[in-house]
Length: 130
Image 1 (cartoon, rainbow, N blue to C red):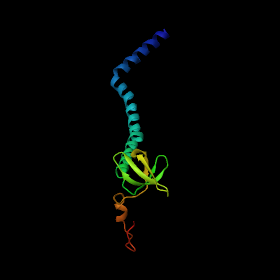
Image 2: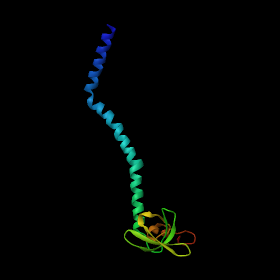
Image 3: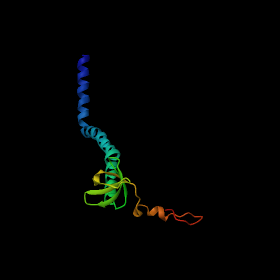
Image 4: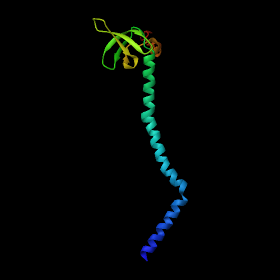
């Protein structure tokens, strides 16, 4: 008789779980949704931001900028085409043509990137920071 009571109570518990179907689905979907949200904010969003900053840097390359390539070559930009950049390296003026996407960093600061710094003034002597 004990086994029969246990089976009937288990079947009654299953019936109550089926009646709370919407609640059961929400308790399964909510953690999954939270994981996707955390994944978005920690991985996807920062990567999109980095990609956008890199594209802006590549689009703003100008002649006479000092750049570093992904291979570690440091040089000065001589000309900029649509997809390639001609850079001059070393004191022997070696010229190398590289793809724009191979440029890792632009070491030259442009005026449009630092207007906020120029606007700051010291209060004592009223000199501009440049």
